[in-house]
Amino acid sequence: MHMSDLIKLTPIFHEKIWGGRQLETVFGYDIPEGPIGECWAISAHPNGDCQIAEGPYAGHTLSWL
Image (cartoon, rainbow, N blue to C red; front, side, top):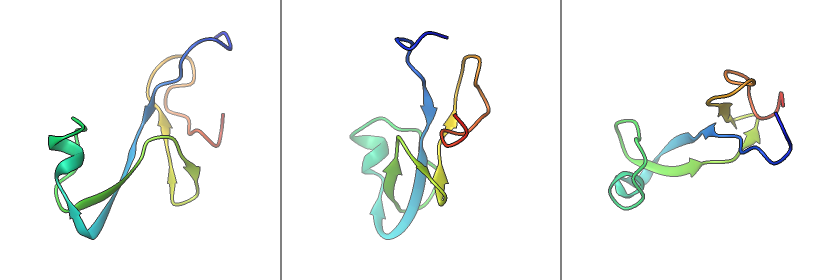
């Protein structure tokens, strides 16, 4: 992998009581059922560590990388 290669991540979605479906209908995300209020698309936070989706690091988390 070269530094110029893109790393594709699997976003983390968080359900919120004020959430809805606009992340799906407006932005095209494939979100889980329920009122989704947040998308952490690039996150290494302990409560939402994105997984690397493809390539040589697939399956590892962003914080691992």
